[in-house]
Length: 193
Image (cartoon, rainbow, N blue to C red; front, side, top):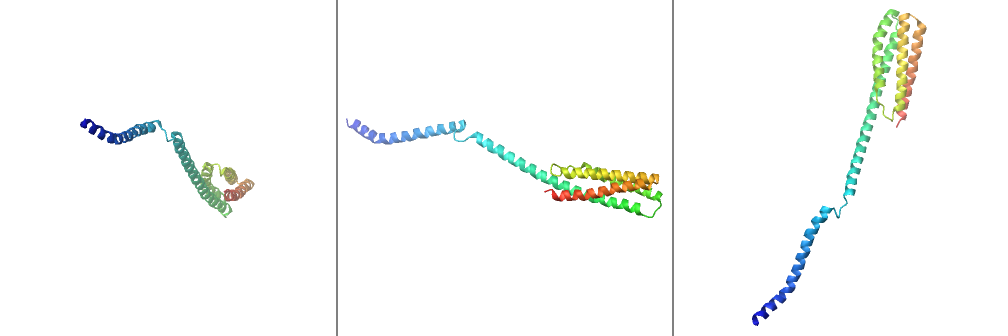
């Protein structure tokens, strides 16, 4: 009997320790099994909100890049417009010098025809500019400028060919109109913010 009492006594003392260890092991197994299952099931994190955040971040970055490219396009438009308007002004002054020179009309006609090609090309470049939404009103005035320039140059050419001063005068009036419209374009460009 001594043998059973010793075993029973040792077993009883260890029983509590074993029981505690068993409970801890059971808890660890449950956590070890439950955690992967929860992660697979997505418990504890909302996938929709994560995907929404990613989508929102993408949309915000796309909007920012669109805004940056829009601002860049607007600056590019202004730069090109200013450059082409300077060219138009310079070419107009050259044509005006030809008309006001003391050369014979035949020389004026020939020289005017040669120099007027540049103003037609610059006018085409002006019309081809993409103003975007911000400078649409400015671009409409630019189109009026180019129309008046073409009309004026064409009338002056015809007047020089026909040796008719009144037709040349009409062309000069169209060129004056274009000049006034250029000032209007500059004013609108400065006013548009």
